[in-house]
Length: 333
Image 1 (cartoon, rainbow, N blue to C red):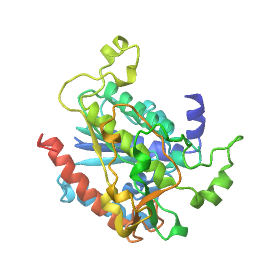
Image 2 (tube, rainbow, N blue to C red):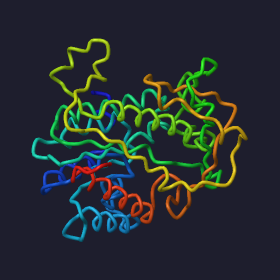
Image 3 (spheres, one colour):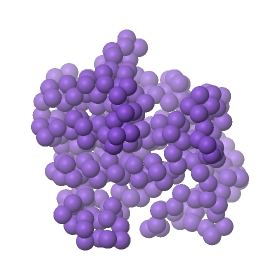
């Protein structure tokens, strides 16, 4: 925690801005937690308002503020550059006060963990689940939505991303373990090196693996964390859940941003059936020789292939609203 606090000493303005937002919050349907993608929803970057995010802020107001015509009330608590431990520090240090009790907490975090800290998929997955555990413990009456890590692409690829081949996604004895985007070295790579060479790493492949495991976890454990019975499961406390009204949800935004292209990188990909979704164990294994279907991430949706534009936020936000309304109205989702 001391290390996380030291990291956030360089970001007091964002943290203080978020604290002001949640202290002034009215009755809320949803609170968004995340990094720069979430902070931009307020028209801010590192706690400072920027004209370049004004259109995004306007989209957010009209979608998530009833007084501007939205169907739900929400606020966004994001900090540019945040990773999963940084978000965890924030919610334990003022951004989740007792008087902030939305019906839904919406988590979008993890993309920064892939670059600067060079985290593996396993670490990011566990970091996100740790955030879920804390929210479930502090706010047991709220529902939680894990938004899958959003697609991102390399500018050098002109927005093209390649799915792992379905062969790679099966639980085969012949699989090879790999670390994140095959760039893990000792000593750790410098921030400058990562920034200069991030385009060489297949981040989308790691995102697919993390999102797959998050979705599977939610399907297997939809009922919420029970801190009172945590001690009863000595083998795996993190996965001890009880059957109460559904609390945990997964939202996949991939199809909102990625447009499929009419080709694959392996002729067997289209006809191969993956068994990963039926397995109960967590696996981040993958071979590294083949790639699956090709997608394009349009610049009009993510101009820098990382942060949604105003149009990207509008498309994503409308889908979020529809999903929220189903949860809030307790209809089939």
